[in-house]
Amino acid sequence: MHKSILLVSLLILGVIGEHLKAVNSLEQTSDIFTPAKAWNNGFNYDQGYANFNGFPRGVGDLNGDGKADILAIGSTGGSNTCISDGSRFTNCYHYANNLPTNFDKYPLAICDVDGDRREDLISFTSNEVRVYLTNGVPPYTYTVWTTEFTENGGQWDSFNVVPRMVKDVNGDGKGDIIGISSSNNVRVALSTGTGFAPSTIWLNYNYGKNFNLYPIFCADVNGDKKADLVSFLANGVYVSLSTGTNFTTPTLWNTGYSVDSTWDNFNGVPRMLADVDGDGKADIIGFASSRVIVSFSDGNSFGPGYQGIYNFVMEHGGWSSYSVYPRFTADVNGDKMADIIGYGYQSTFVSLSQGRPSNITARS
Ligand SMILES: [Ca+2]
Ligand SMILES: [Ca+2]
Ligand SMILES: [Ca+2]
Ligand SMILES: [Ca+2]
Image (cartoon, rainbow, N blue to C red):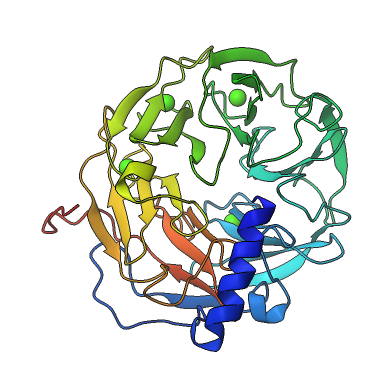
């Protein structure tokens, strides 16, 4: 996240103070997600994880059992993970040492890059991309997979301006690097299983160069196992499908979730892509100020917004900012439907997806 986001977040926290703590497990009726339950108490604001940039956190299936686990970077760069057993994040262990603690400058990603179905940790440092393969006895050590996409390897110096992601864009089961350069080139470096091949340009695209205003993601939205590019521009959500060798010209898939429709910053009203109903196509999960909204992908567009849950948002539960209370979406109980994971004030909360009930009505 950009520095200004942190300052704004700290200001908000200071001004509003104690009553805005993401502590809840609110009683609420929920159309898609079950009420929030605490699954872990270790990587939260109250335990010193003050903000996302300084204490990056993530989710990913680190042991390959189909259930996403949590991972957090502490103040000295040591990282710990807690494994999902389907109802808690438990069995915690030390994952790796000396990871960077400035996400905007040195972003991290979690993705399986060698195809063994265990997700790995990818760290973009000042001069090399380090891959921590989760295939041995922790704590894991890294190998350097490329020197591209780094500060010294081409002015990749801020996630907010020149984001980098790791997702499988060619469908071979191994995660690839996708980076959008300052000259608007979407560069892809394919994983060989033991390294990242030299990057090539898959698209020239000006996404806005400001992730906080115009968030951008890689996720498979049409179910062909190749991750596509999804960007939230000023007037709507645009999708650029992966062909396996390039990204197609972006087309408009939904007119909401964007700056013009009051979704004006990621820090306050985050948006994500994950497959909430388990049909293989990633859907939009939007954390509006008053509730979580889901728009399902039909492979050609994102449909109308369904009420997801009245929690994990500013007005319900005190989730005042992404910086202080980061949220993620991933399948934590192994039913192939993506759930909500929120790092709250004292606990990490989970709301499970119940899929797409036929009796719920779309509202936008
Ligand atoms: Ca797991
Ligand atoms: Ca791949
Ligand atoms: Ca795709
Ligand atoms: Ca879906």
